[in-house]
Image (cartoon, rainbow, N blue to C red; front, side, top):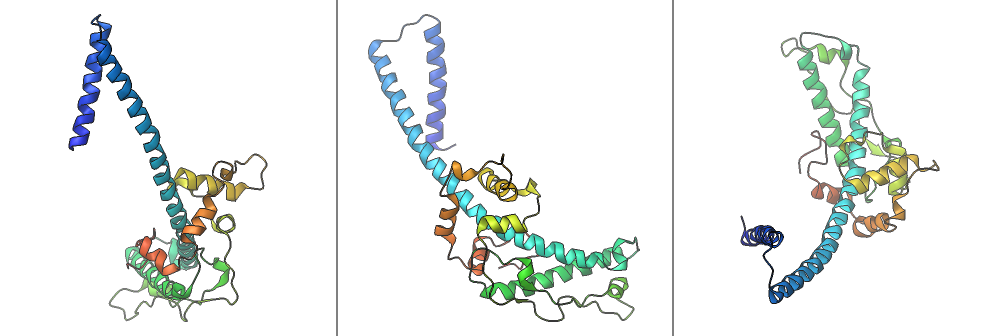
Amino acid sequence: MSSASSHISNLSSLANKLEKRYHSGIPIPDDFLQEIIKLNQKVEAFLQESQKQFDSSERNESIKKMVLLIWSIFFNNVIQKIVQDHSEFPIYHTCMADKDHAKCVMADDIREKIRLLHEMLESWPHLVPPQLKDINFPAGHLQNQMLYASYDDGIEPRVGFVELPSLKPNIEPLSIIDYIAFEYEVEEDYIKDTTVLCFVRFAKDRELEYVYDPSENDPTFLSDVMERYGSTRYLEVCEMFPNLLSIYHPRQ
């Protein structure tokens, strides 16, 4: 226990003992009572000031988590698209003896496609990710028969895209709220930050009359996100969040 923590703990213990003495009928001397009053005033002033610092720290963390969220949305959507492509293989829903091998091959395919998209995004200059519709996704090398293959039958699984993925020309990034509205699929269980979650719910339901607009409570939150991180490029986001949610994302 640190020295400060020890002193605070001792102060709490002494206060409890003092209260018991007082309630048992032992009077507190006036000069001692005056010192207690002064101490209470100092503690209250400290708590008020420290609350401001705590609130500011929490808000800064929420701002950072909003950046993490929008890029997490992007990579979640990419993975879902690749998995959807895999689900069209006849083998995908079967119970073959070598199913574990098929799972490993599909996981390798996701990793390779994420790697290629990661390289493509190195030139992306905006904080807000592109929409999936703004990306040219080539066909994949992986074919159904490659998932049946064992390591001894001469069929070598190939992963990744046949051609390099690319961004469509003249893409304009959306605002954060519009990006969430168009790209986020409702899976709120992994959003742990209350402020971010409020903005997500507003983005998805803002056409409804009863939806709460978190900007009423914090009108500059989104503008502060852009002021602080608006010039942040994709590669800088990767440095901020090395894992970027997905286990498939390339390690930096």
